Length: 469
Image (cartoon, rainbow, N blue to C red):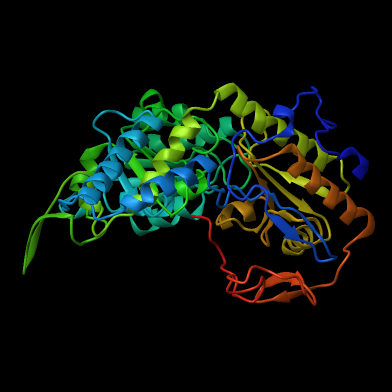
């Protein structure tokens, strides 16, 4: 393969010749034309292939924010004009989100900080009798930490996934047959490899043995339509920052009985019916877990984003994403020394995946490759262990790998630029010297300028070990 293949709007590498909606975005996002400075001089349009961590806000959502921001005020207890509007916007957001996921009429919709927060909330609502939990939580070793760590504080049972999805389902069946499981916790789509799990099948399996199911949909919701009523899913959690909305809002949707009886997630104002000096009567419904002033703008923009996503033509949406993914995977497989990773041998790479591709480059640290692609090619993607340490060890990648992720604002050109950069790396090596600073690879003697308002230039702040939640 040579870099000549990677020209704008090219469909080289696509075995069936499909084009990704002329290689253009499916929906407009903010920041789509950001100019990234290159270490060797000049600028290039930033190729954002890090949607899986935090997606850019939809342009429609940004416009909506500017429309409602002047009316931002207190909610629920304010008699003023702005407070009444803010309350209406906030509460209506619940109905919008419930409709987006195909929720049942009585499902609770609780706004949280993110998916991690939602799943920790649910962990505090597992059934208890006589001071003891009535069952265990069952989960696989492929989970994001958000759907792994909250369950370690309650009775739990972890299972190593098999080499195929079919075999993994049978492994879960064997565990459930042993009894004692109250909740099956699964991801909707892997944040590491993009592989989709069969939610409806797993829900039926859990219910067959008297358990409920919760789905971590942080990655699935931005890429596929979900219907928890049709799939008979009990609880669903996802995050606004992965669904093209700003302000760090998340949501938990699901059956109200456990939630109404569970430990209030955040003790404070609004979560009570009556507070006394020596006790409290807690509220039921979403208020029970939304103590304090809520993230009104976060909930509102999350709801608006779901409306935009719900209005997309499903066939066009999946075709846009699948075409970019196929082009990228086939291109990576043609470059010597690059390995594309997946969990299950029987995953259909065309229909059983979302816009996430995981790979590694032989002879290079993943962080160094990411720094090189950013500095020399203006490509942004993820490196590390993706808050899924057990899975990375399972894949034989204990020190990490690389992940390209994309969505409705992506262009075929973004994938082409990534492939061209990797081909150049394999043919000629690094074009600049790189050093490790605060645990991260950065270009040596970096003199590129950044916005005056940016508090730190890259590499000057300590690197967080895991920030995908």
